[in-house]
Amino acid sequence: MPTYQYACRSTECRNEFERVQSFSDPAVSHCPVCGGPV
Picture 1 (cartoon, rainbow, N blue to C red):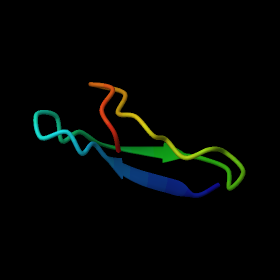
Picture 2: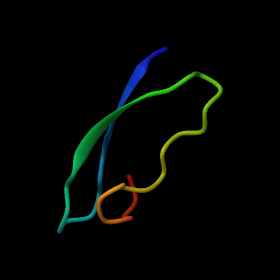
Picture 3: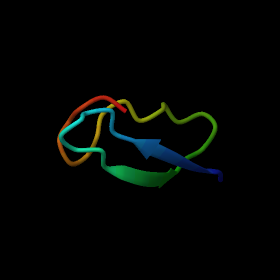
C-alpha cells in the first residue's frame, strides 16, 4: 500500500504526517493534532 504525506494548512499547527492507505481509502481531510484542514 502506498504511503501518503499530509501537511496541516493551519498557520498555528503546520503538523506534517504520513499515512499508509489503500487506493480505495478516503483521503485524510483533517489534521489529527488540531483538526484543521490538510
